[in-house]
Length: 230
Image (cartoon, rainbow, N blue to C red; front, side, top):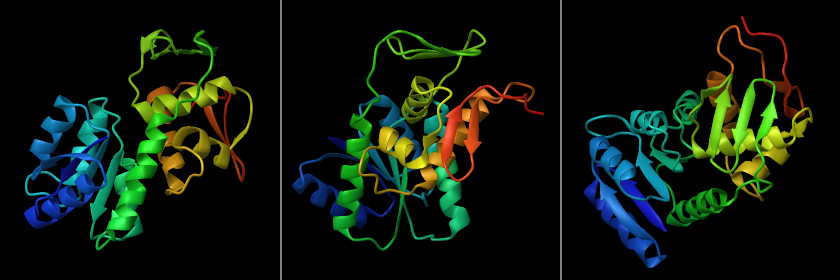
């Protein structure tokens, strides 16, 4: 498994490379956000360990650009910041997990293992196209279309949408969705689900379009066409 380590502290990068190499990972390094974007888009990467504070662009902006380019590689954000608003900012930018400095190497390795397990899990099923209202998902080609127009989704967004489509008109609990999309047992931040539901809604429910992903308060979510959004 290949891990991209992005941090402007050379001593920390060397430490992480040594420890992760000992644990059996293949490591690449970047000291800036620009380098990270080039490496993440130019060669296969299984997980990005990304520092928030970088000398050129922030780790949050790096994550945002990766997601905008359709790169769904799991991102584990490292930061000395522990404010709830900053945690939400990182998740909204597309980070999959968040680890506050200082951290133990054991916890970092555990978080990496969890991300890799989740990346391997896909909601299996027949390859027939899935349709619901104006939405079409083709598992064979991994294409998603809304009213005939292509919709570009990250790997995690696609996986979540496929689960919802395979169970359209059914209420899925938060626990069920977390397990299906991120793996079971889920040991990450449960607010990831809310973040990815927001990502999907932005792409599938523009103003004036029908509501497709409905919140069932206290339970979870369901895919069901509802009134148009204002």
